[in-house]
Amino acid sequence: MYKRIKRWIQALNPNTHSENGWVNEFTTEEVDVIDIRFKLYGYGWKPNVDDENLSTLEKGSYKISYRINGTSDWTFLARVDSSRAGTDEVTVYKHVGITTGLLQAEKYDIKIEADKGSKFTAWGGSLEGITSGGQFWYDLEVRALAYKILNNYDELAVTENAEMQLV
Image (cartoon, rainbow, N blue to C red; front, side, top):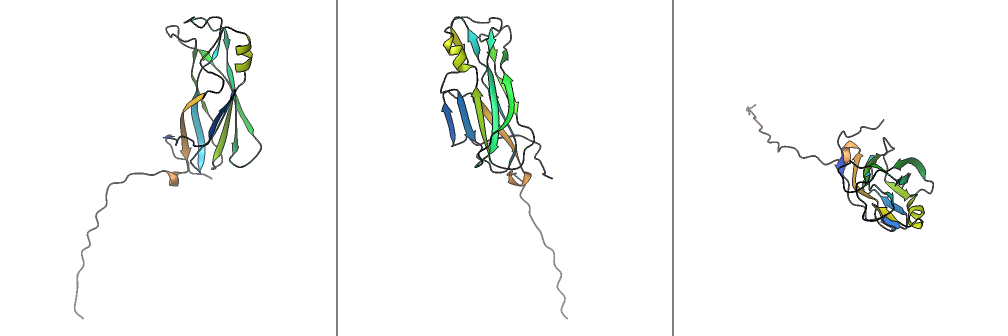
Protein backbone atom coordinates (compact mmCIF):
# COMPACT_ATOMS: atom_id res chain seq x y z
CA MET A 1 0.00 0.00 0.00
CA TYR A 2 1.36 3.41 -0.94
CA LYS A 3 0.97 6.54 1.13
CA ARG A 4 -0.03 9.22 -1.34
CA ILE A 5 0.74 12.87 -0.88
CA LYS A 6 -2.49 14.87 -1.06
CA ARG A 7 -1.16 17.81 -3.00
CA TRP A 8 0.14 18.25 -6.48
CA ILE A 9 3.63 19.64 -6.92
CA GLN A 10 5.01 21.39 -9.96
CA ALA A 11 7.14 18.75 -11.63
CA LEU A 12 10.66 19.40 -12.77
CA ASN A 13 10.75 20.15 -16.46
CA PRO A 14 11.93 16.96 -18.08
CA ASN A 15 15.41 16.99 -19.59
CA THR A 16 14.38 14.06 -21.73
CA HIS A 17 11.57 15.19 -24.00
CA SER A 18 11.14 15.12 -27.74
CA GLU A 19 8.76 16.62 -30.26
CA ASN A 20 8.85 14.49 -33.40
CA GLY A 21 6.16 15.29 -35.95
CA TRP A 22 2.81 14.61 -34.30
CA VAL A 23 4.26 12.73 -31.31
CA ASN A 24 5.61 14.17 -28.04
CA GLU A 25 7.41 12.06 -25.46
CA PHE A 26 8.80 13.03 -22.07
CA THR A 27 10.08 11.35 -18.92
CA THR A 28 9.21 12.47 -15.41
CA GLU A 29 12.34 13.51 -13.55
CA GLU A 30 10.95 12.53 -10.16
CA VAL A 31 11.59 8.87 -9.34
CA ASP A 32 8.64 7.85 -7.14
CA VAL A 33 5.75 9.38 -9.11
CA ILE A 34 2.32 7.89 -8.46
CA ASP A 35 0.05 10.43 -10.23
CA ILE A 36 0.79 12.60 -13.25
CA ARG A 37 -1.28 15.42 -14.71
CA PHE A 38 -0.72 17.99 -17.41
CA LYS A 39 -2.64 20.15 -19.87
CA LEU A 40 -2.92 19.66 -23.61
CA TYR A 41 -3.31 22.47 -26.12
CA GLY A 42 -6.69 22.43 -27.80
CA TYR A 43 -6.51 21.98 -31.55
CA GLY A 44 -8.72 21.50 -34.56
CA TRP A 45 -9.34 22.41 -38.16
CA LYS A 46 -10.96 25.52 -39.58
CA PRO A 47 -11.20 26.63 -43.21
CA ASN A 48 -9.48 30.01 -42.82
CA VAL A 49 -6.64 31.01 -40.50
CA ASP A 50 -8.33 34.36 -39.73
CA ASP A 51 -11.62 32.81 -38.61
CA GLU A 52 -12.36 33.43 -34.94
CA ASN A 53 -15.07 32.29 -32.57
CA LEU A 54 -16.58 29.73 -34.95
CA SER A 55 -18.74 26.83 -34.00
CA THR A 56 -16.63 23.71 -33.64
CA LEU A 57 -15.79 22.31 -37.06
CA GLU A 58 -13.39 19.38 -36.75
CA LYS A 59 -11.89 18.95 -33.30
CA GLY A 60 -8.55 17.33 -32.72
CA SER A 61 -7.74 14.48 -30.40
CA TYR A 62 -4.75 13.03 -28.60
CA LYS A 63 -3.81 9.45 -27.77
CA ILE A 64 -1.94 9.29 -24.47
CA SER A 65 0.15 6.30 -23.37
CA TYR A 66 2.63 5.72 -20.55
CA ARG A 67 5.24 3.21 -19.48
CA ILE A 68 7.69 2.72 -16.64
CA ASN A 69 10.96 4.29 -17.69
CA GLY A 70 13.29 1.67 -19.15
CA THR A 71 10.57 -0.76 -20.26
CA SER A 72 9.46 -1.23 -23.86
CA ASP A 73 5.67 -1.75 -23.72
CA TRP A 74 3.37 1.27 -23.75
CA THR A 75 0.10 1.21 -21.77
CA PHE A 76 -2.75 3.10 -23.45
CA LEU A 77 -4.19 5.64 -21.01
CA ALA A 78 -6.83 7.64 -22.88
CA ARG A 79 -7.99 9.31 -26.04
CA VAL A 80 -8.71 12.96 -25.28
CA ASP A 81 -10.73 15.18 -27.60
CA SER A 82 -10.34 18.94 -27.80
CA SER A 83 -13.53 20.77 -26.97
CA ARG A 84 -15.23 24.02 -27.86
CA ALA A 85 -13.83 27.18 -26.32
CA GLY A 86 -16.31 29.68 -24.90
CA THR A 87 -18.32 31.78 -27.31
CA ASP A 88 -16.41 34.89 -26.27
CA GLU A 89 -13.01 33.29 -26.97
CA VAL A 90 -10.95 34.26 -30.00
CA THR A 91 -9.83 30.66 -30.53
CA VAL A 92 -12.20 27.87 -31.41
CA TYR A 93 -10.65 25.00 -29.43
CA LYS A 94 -9.83 25.13 -25.72
CA HIS A 95 -7.12 23.35 -23.74
CA VAL A 96 -7.91 20.19 -21.80
CA GLY A 97 -6.35 18.51 -18.77
CA ILE A 98 -5.42 14.85 -18.36
CA THR A 99 -4.62 12.86 -15.21
CA THR A 100 -3.20 9.34 -15.12
CA GLY A 101 -4.73 8.37 -11.80
CA LEU A 102 -2.97 6.22 -9.24
CA LEU A 103 0.13 4.45 -10.59
CA GLN A 104 2.88 2.28 -9.17
CA ALA A 105 5.64 4.43 -7.67
CA GLU A 106 8.17 4.72 -10.52
CA LYS A 107 9.74 7.08 -13.03
CA TYR A 108 7.48 7.27 -16.12
CA ASP A 109 7.64 7.97 -19.84
CA ILE A 110 4.60 9.68 -21.35
CA LYS A 111 3.73 9.61 -25.07
CA ILE A 112 1.24 12.07 -26.57
CA GLU A 113 0.15 11.60 -30.17
CA ALA A 114 -1.88 14.29 -31.96
CA ASP A 115 -3.59 11.67 -34.08
CA LYS A 116 -5.54 14.01 -36.36
CA GLY A 117 -2.77 16.56 -36.98
CA SER A 118 -1.53 15.15 -40.29
CA LYS A 119 -5.09 14.59 -41.54
CA PHE A 120 -6.07 18.21 -40.87
CA THR A 121 -2.95 19.70 -42.49
CA ALA A 122 -3.63 17.64 -45.62
CA TRP A 123 -7.06 19.26 -45.90
CA GLY A 124 -5.65 22.75 -46.37
CA GLY A 125 -7.32 25.53 -44.43
CA SER A 126 -5.86 26.05 -40.97
CA LEU A 127 -4.84 23.85 -38.09
CA GLU A 128 -5.47 25.87 -34.93
CA GLY A 129 -3.63 25.27 -31.66
CA ILE A 130 -0.58 23.10 -32.49
CA THR A 131 2.04 22.57 -35.16
CA SER A 132 3.98 19.54 -36.30
CA GLY A 133 7.13 19.24 -34.22
CA GLY A 134 5.76 21.48 -31.48
CA GLN A 135 5.14 20.77 -27.81
CA PHE A 136 1.50 19.78 -27.17
CA TRP A 137 1.57 19.76 -23.35
CA TYR A 138 2.30 22.17 -20.48
CA ASP A 139 1.87 22.59 -16.68
CA LEU A 140 3.26 19.19 -15.72
CA GLU A 141 2.43 18.31 -12.10
CA VAL A 142 2.95 15.11 -10.12
CA ARG A 143 2.17 13.46 -6.82
CA ALA A 144 4.92 11.37 -5.32
CA LEU A 145 5.47 9.18 -2.30
CA ALA A 146 5.26 11.34 0.79
CA TYR A 147 8.81 10.79 1.94
CA LYS A 148 10.15 12.24 -1.32
CA ILE A 149 8.35 15.55 -0.83
CA LEU A 150 10.45 18.17 0.93
CA ASN A 151 8.64 19.99 3.70
CA ASN A 152 9.58 23.12 5.59
CA TYR A 153 9.26 22.82 9.33
CA ASP A 154 9.60 25.41 12.07
CA GLU A 155 12.94 25.32 13.81
CA LEU A 156 12.86 23.27 16.95
CA ALA A 157 14.68 24.44 20.05
CA VAL A 158 15.48 21.88 22.74
CA THR A 159 16.03 23.05 26.30
CA GLU A 160 17.37 20.50 28.72
CA ASN A 161 17.05 20.84 32.47
CA ALA A 162 19.26 18.55 34.53
CA GLU A 163 19.77 18.13 38.21
CA MET A 164 23.02 16.86 39.64
CA GLN A 165 23.44 15.07 42.92
CA LEU A 166 26.64 14.02 44.60
CA VAL A 167 26.70 10.39 45.64
